[in-house]
Amino acid sequence: MTDTARGGLFRPIVPNQHSRVTYAELFFDLVFVFAVTQISHTLLAHFTPLGALQVTLLFLAVWWVWVYTSWITNWLNPEKTPVRLLLFAMTLGGLVLSTSIPTAFDGRALWFAIAYAAMQVGKTVFLWASTLPSQSLARANAIRITSWLAMSAVFWIAGGLAEGPSRLVLWAIALAIEYISPAVRFWIPRYGASSVADWVVEGGHMAERCAGFIIIALGESIVVTGATFAELTWTTENVLAFVSAFAGCLAMWWIYFHKGAEAGSEQISKSSEPGRLARLAYTYLHMPIIAGIIVTAVADELVLKHPGGHSDLKTVISAIGGPLLFLFGTILFKHSFRGFLQLSHGVGIVALCVLAWFASELSPLALSILTTSIMIVVAVWESISLQSSSAE
Image (cartoon, rainbow, N blue to C red):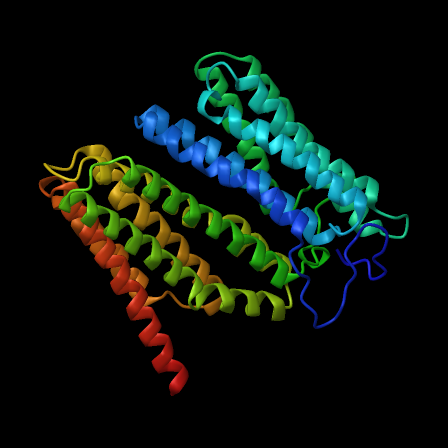
């Protein structure tokens, strides 16, 4: 936010200095390891069109509450005791939210809705209360955000009280309100819309926060793979499925972190409009990346348990869909700061689409090996191409 004299509970602006991620923020992230696990297990247990739609809505809610908190802690200073206490309260709310995920469309719907609404509205009211009289732009933006989140909270609570399809509709409306609000710059009567220039964001901190969530998702994938493999009788097929799952996870790490994460952090730190880039690249475009990792983890568990025979529809969708979502997200993410579409990622997307045509004829193990091979080729190709271009 453009108030130059930031003080009170706000992070100090230090030119040419990166604001580090604090231990309080990392502690807050721990609950989202559990949340991601709950989402993947819920998808595995309800792998139907309706179940997938419900889990998608829950995933979008979890991501949105986390990324909004990252924006808040980009402005506020978690080293200050009141902000730290806010994060601890948010951690408790996140734990309630996460434990409610498996039955969010059943017995614990209202708990999920209350936890979510309280986290979203509570932290923005805190931001509003934290602004000093001299921080007119920061206060106006806090009022705008609070107004939009309070409106969506009505639909969250109403959905928690509703039954059947009405709950899904009401929660979809609530999410639509929240996802549209940044795109319209939180316009409200009297205050109007915020300017992109109003959103001063510490780019390195935002990039590091989102990279941390990628680690959370990849870590959950490793936990699922290891826990499933430990319970099985170790046959040749299971061992190969285990190696393929690990190699696929490693390829995803390489594609995101080898060049992309650091380049994105540098670009947003140098950008004249870091708020715009943070909104596009880190708020919106990271969603398919993380969703792809979660869906791939579901596929890995399915393949580990049933590596032989023909691949059923559930295995095909998750084994192909996970890497597709990941590559779709990463190619757009890297385009947002490189200005061109990475050829290796595009070829990987095409290869996965071609593989989908005959995937049902393959065994789950063969399908896993092929999708992993495609991801490895993408990772190696990008590394070589970027190394060659930098050497010229």
